[in-house]
Length: 152
Image (cartoon, rainbow, N blue to C red; front, side):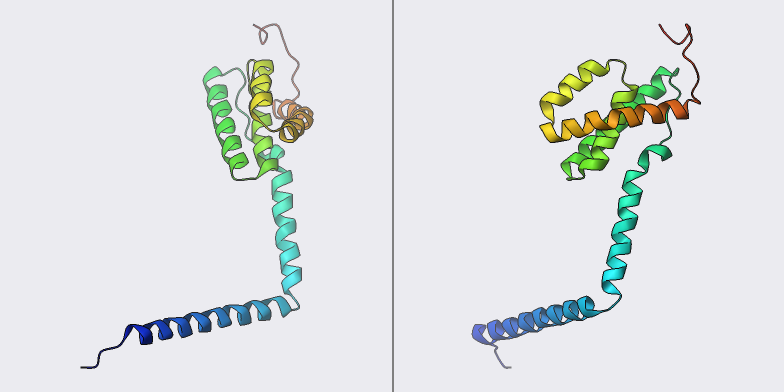
């Protein structure tokens, strides 16, 4: 039986690591020199940008007369907004928070809390998104006029 020394194992591990690193560098160089690489990358980024910005039109707004549905929607939007902001996805997170503000029963108090907890740039972005979200919710409601029954 042949015993393999620790030095030999170390050398083998080092050579294997160097080969792996060399392969990674080679593969990355081949990928970057591919003529379609930049084109594919731009298309992927364009798709991601278009998917993020057009989100307000695809929202399923709750029935604003159903208090329970509004509350569930509100909590889901706040949670999604917080998670996205924590992941660094500012645009999507602000979009969700603005939807929560739009259906909130007391938006002024919520905005005060958000102003204290969010960075100033993020809060300003939220304020800029609110009019567009308000229009979106009105379009989803069919642009119906507010009646005395709706105001309580």
